[in-house]
Image 1 (cartoon, one colour):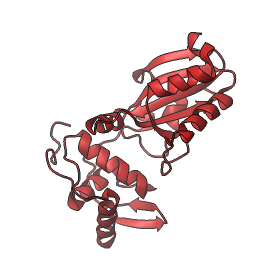
Image 2 (tube, helix red, strand yellow):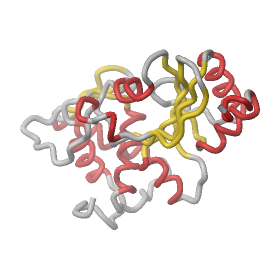
Image 3 (spheres, helix red, strand yellow):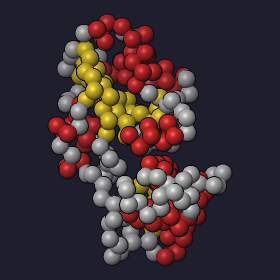
Length: 223
C-alpha cells in the first residue's frame, strides 16, 4: 500500500487502534488473531516493528482503551467485538464472495483421486517471516472431499485479509490419512501453531511439507 500513513513508523497503541478499526470494524474475532494480523499488516505495508517486548500486551492495551471509548467489547474470554459507529472503512478487505476462483491459481497439482490435501498461505505471512530472516511461515494444510478451491475460499468466517497463495493440491483417495500423517510429523517437529483458529496452521513451508509427503508416499508426487 503506497499511501500507508504509518509507513516507516514503529507501531504504537494508537496506531494499533487505527488498524484494528480499519481492518475489523463490525467483526468479532479472537484477540490472538487481532495480534497476528495487525502486526503483519503494519510490517507488510512498510511500518517498523514494535519496540515492546510483548506485542500482545500492546494490543491488549489498545483494546482496553477502545472498550472505554465504546469502540470494542470483550464478548467472552479471548473474543472481541469491534464496533466503532460511523467509522469509514478505509482498508477494504477481499471477501470470499468477491474472490473469483480463476484469479487464485494453484502452483502445482499432484496425484489422482476424488479427495484432496491442500497447502495455502498469505503472502504477508511469508513476507514478514522473510523480513526477520526466517525460512518458515504460517501455512494451512487441510483436506476436502470436494473442490479444493471452493473449500479454501469458503472456510473463513470473516473476510480474508488478502488472496491466498495456494501452493499445491494433492489429489488422493485417502486424504484423511495423508493429512493426519503430515500434521503428526509437523507437530512432532514443534511446528503446530497452538493459538491459531483451527488445528491446521503450522510454521512450515511448501518444501518441508512436500518432503514429508515424499517420505510417507513417494509415488503420489510422481503421478
